[in-house]
Length: 257
Image (cartoon, rainbow, N blue to C red; front, top):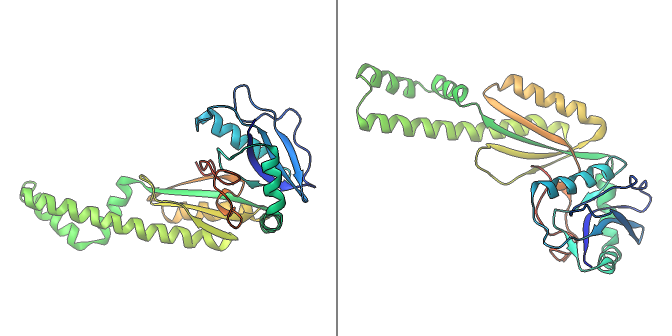
């Protein structure tokens, strides 16, 4: 049977919580495979596994339970090896890389920050900052709403101003939080968010980081800022040299949500 991999820890990592279940229906029994001073957290891989909410949450739950006791290198959802030996072979082959990453990430967690505009507030902001926009809006108002062309012009100007404000705010947000983090990873652009950034934070500095987030909310009230964490450091785990996708680092990212 193929083997599902949740993450990698040092072989001195505390024991797993008793009865910890993973992906699958019924949940697969989570177990440990040790090799070369490392341990892979695994279970039997169920047939036909799909990235449904229940399975994604099961994957994250295992990593949260393991990560609560010490550093874990999280694998992405759907990371499957052909069997247990394939897992231990990769541990042996890339032992130094994984050990280096465990040392680098020890005592650190990830916080993912997403931000979007509060529509009414950002419109008020761009209008206040642009005499040209205010003048065109006033001219349209005095003309009983303005011509079709002037309405289109106003809409395009507002959209351009909002787009520019998005870029400005994304940069300001990242710079405001960066000093409290050990490392930063900018996530892929997605509809609905002007910023999607993950921060690697020392556990002992977590409150300092969250205080900085609250300060951003106070200073930039036209933003809606959401924080997810602490998380295992999904965004800061790198595959080893020539690591084959789907063996120890493939699958679907289940970290930031």
